[in-house]
Image 1 (cartoon, rainbow, N blue to C red):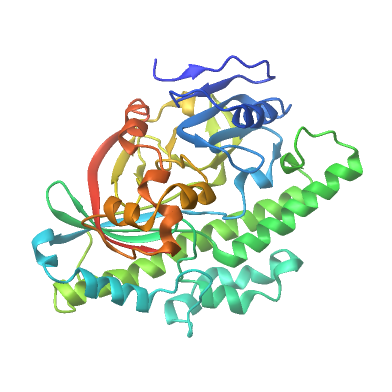
Image 2 (spheres, rainbow, N blue to C red):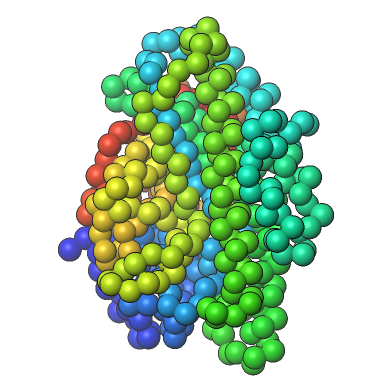
Length: 393
């Protein structure tokens, strides 16, 4: 059996696909979650599980009558999009640096935003619902429009990859930007205030929750779905620009049709049916993997990434890992590794090789092959990719 039930004295059991024992802080975090009275059946931990805020990154939490906004986190709808292009790797010869510089010029990274709002963004149908979002974000519509089609920072990335058949894939990782972060903070604060007023003795203040059927729950659920849609469309806007850049260099600007497109969230919540019951499923650093689902599991920027197809494993609530998972914190990575290490570990990848991306060095992540081995009952591999261009947020 690829997963094990952890020996914890909690209200709900914890099933883990990580073949390593959890540290004391991680154990405490999962015990806190599994002790909440509204958790359904069990908590599932993915192979890349590591410390988060309130709940572990790499945990799948199904709940019956409540939802925990901090368990979803502040990058609502963060996820990955990938498309397989009708080009092969030989066509990239001598063009990698030009492609990278074009991507950096066309897609804002870090805290930056677009100077102008493009037509596809203006036409996005969900702007009409903006006035129904939390009152704390009502002055942010202009910023949200300018950030639509921007990457953000941290571990967000844009990559040109090759699969083992030498086919070109385009991949990018991003979420709901400043607007998603602000919406999350507004609702997390409300949940914490409600817990204080009710005198709820929570094991961790970040586990403050909303109860189904209350106006606060309804407001959060509405804003959550809106931010998840924003994140998905944000990836589509960037991918369209990215595709045009690659077509300019490889097809003389002629439009092409992708052979496969995948766009999946890995920080989000949805209503789903599991074990015959309607539940709210929170995936914090996990990807849905029903038998119909394609998913994306990236390694670090010097390692392999995988396009997968779900196996619909019910014990994991039809989920799989969202990446390799960090082995060490950003600060620790900066203290342990040097620029020379970064240059060595990203050999053969056209990317920035400066201190600004040192915290994203491949050595700061768990080995992706091990992660994949631990979830062979959750997904099958459809394509194995290796990046040749990487733009970091």
